[in-house]
Amino acid sequence: MKNKPDPLDNKFRERFSDFQAEPDEALLAKIQARLNPYTHRTQTIFGPSVWLVSSTLVFLALWGDGLMPLPSHTNEFPDKTITELEAYQNHQPQKPTNHQNHHTEIIPRSRKDTAFFSSDYTPTLPDTIKIASRENAPIPENQPFYISIIPGIEFSPAKNPETILKLTKINTHALSPQPGENKAPRLFISLKPQMNYYHIRPDKKDDILVRDIDAGKFLSAQRLGWSIQMGGYLALNDRFSLRVGASYTQWKQTWQYTFNAVNSGEIGTLFTQNKTIHAAGLAADVLYAFRPGKRHTSYWVSGLQVSFPVGAPALQTQIIGQLGYNWSYPIQKNVIFWAEPTLGIHLNRIQNETEPVKIRPYTLGLHLGLSLKLGK
Amino acid sequence: MHIEADLVKACQQNDAKAQTTFYNLYKSYLFGICIRYAKSKEEAEDIFQEAFARIFEGIKKVKNPEAIDYWVKQVVVNTAINYYKKHLKFNQIKDYEYLAYQSSNQDHLKIMDDLTTTELLKIINELPDGYRVVFNLYVIDGYTHPEISKLLGITASTSKSQLSRAKELIRSKLKKCGITSYEKQTGSIG
Image 1 (cartoon, rainbow over the protein chains, first blue to last red):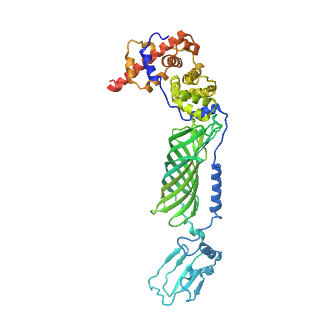
Image 2: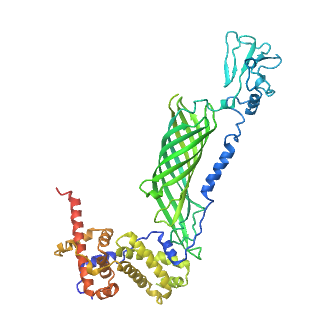
Image 3: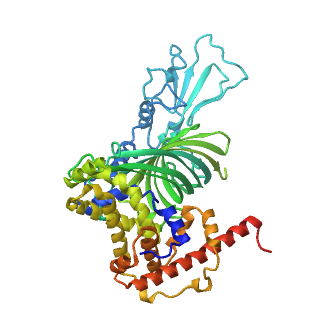
């Protein structure tokens, strides 16, 4: 039938008669979807949103104001419990007169001058105590010493044989950051290495059959990523502060899942995707100083981050809930180093158009940051 | 061949494992056909899915498992034709720039030798739908014009003219590729 053999024909025939091309791995699942009725078997851990809400409630129940158990000891005053100090505070007159404020009690010489700090202390002490020094205990003349133990408790200069221990009312808020200490605005920059986990389930809106997903005990894969963040702190009160920042995140997505056909536990294809995600975001976190201290301070952190994948459709915007523990330590007068282990949960699932599944990432990260105090 | 016949029989009995094996055995070959007939990878995937669904549905009716290679290819080609049939208007295809390139020499054959299969595939993919289908059917898959006319519902002469125009367009594209390649080798034209 072919009258004139054309060299062009021959060359094309040679090149393409056995031409092969590799189809996408997910196509088998789509073909199976066309052959079988549509059903879904989702794999959910619980609702991650439920996890987030419940963990927040537990957090508030355990550590919220009024319910939070105070630490048993202070760093500055390790041998006295807060309970004892509070007990002392509660025995103080609410509105002491000047006379009461300068009440003096002579303690017999037989008691040690460290009586206040010993275990036989009873919370009946007046504002000011004169403690008799022990016999033969040398009290340096003309060398007054002045010891500040905790705010509100002082040893006064001792120029005579009686050591005067002057006590003022102890306020538990004295253990909080001092007024103004946390209220200075701060700038910060942080780096967060992070590990990503993925929870995969079928897309219910897709007309594709995904009978089962084998994602390796719910979480299919994990890959490293990193995030940098810059922003500022704004103190809401002595305990709470707001941290707002802009972030840039990069991580690799890798997940695998197997589609299984109806009435078979064997047929299936393993689908693997590797992708590097770049995302710009805005984050807002509330920090609660549950263990403030002169040197280091511990915070609970809870917040939200909105993340916009770069070069992806706007629909792939992700909202991430974050919980963390922050440990801050001043390394300079105005510079604070902090470390913050963080759990992030993507509140909305992400999906690419070509994939029949939706993916919810979980992130474990460690924020390492530096804060710069502005002002005094 | 004997193994493939057994595989077909297993597929006819809805053996899921056999279906997977069958799919893995033919997927590259059949997707290669799809991608020749399609103008994009996405369209090739659509054709591929449709074709394989037809294969698994129709394999139960295959009476001669030894001829399965021919049969699956037929299914894919028919699926590709059906895919484009809705959009094809062979008599209304406009003439393109090929008119300026008459086959006066064989330069394009030499140029073709220097191109990769992927580059040649791109040239095929860029052909108008009607040209591409006829070119594939006639040149690569070996159909005759009467056969093509039946498959596409056109006259044999229309098939010939479509093929002729397709080739002219390919020659012109090949020459352009040759010029581009020459410019790359010698630097930009100043």
